[in-house]
Image (tube, rainbow, N blue to C red; front, top):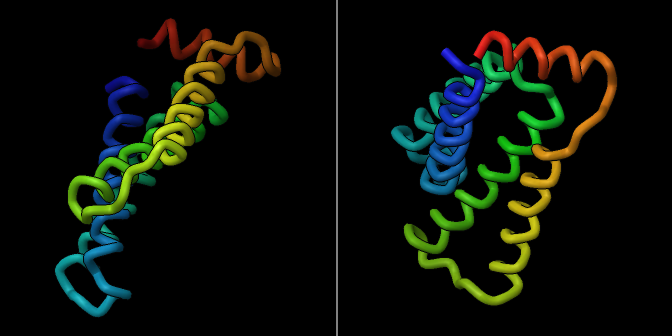
Length: 122
């Protein structure tokens, strides 16, 4: 399977694990506490598979940035967290940063080889 598939899976399960962390109430509720372990186990495993074909800087920035944005959306929808202009602006800046990083050319020869190998394998 492709690195993008694994990265997407990693992001989804990271957001799931983080949501379960909120619901676990400091690991005092069993079901969500188990959900934390499952979510982060699947997330990190998927991220490690994604790193086989996606450069580290790109994969980690995308994983953490999109995961953060998704957690903000979940917080607003599921937990009634407030939304204000600064929160929206901050998430937009995170997403813009991810887009710029993903479009950036150059880097070390090793990362260029990784990108070339990923393109050939994908």
